[in-house]
Figure 1 (cartoon, rainbow, N blue to C red):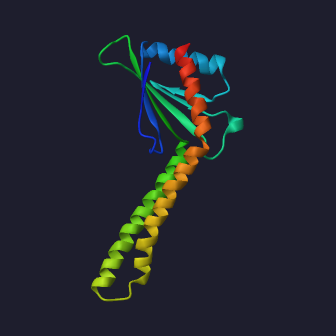
Figure 2 (tube, rainbow, N blue to C red):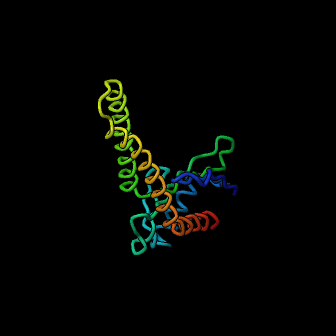
Length: 169
């Protein structure tokens, strides 16, 4: 198995594995291991996608989720590519992205207000303060995401080890 990963700066780490098995065999291997063997990890199977959560007793706000996609190799029909994505639960990710979207839109609105008030030579203290404050808030949100990622890092390692153990069996 050869594993490729993206840069550690990403909030949602991705990886890719080349495996010498057919996609159907791999998916069945995961189903057997997660539904019959290791029922500790809640999981869902949808087509070629496998979603594995951390155990309920260890679950917290920043707990990661492992999304796996198994696809057939284009070069060899006896091989598969296992694509993985670690990320927060969809509810947490949606909330996080919604807050980023609101901050971004607010920044644009206050930047336009600043330009208009400056052009009309009116008092522009509030828009100026917001244009300075919102990028700082955006940076704080990024670092909160990094803190959340580091909080769930051991759980990410556990999910990754579980996946590797299943692939190696």
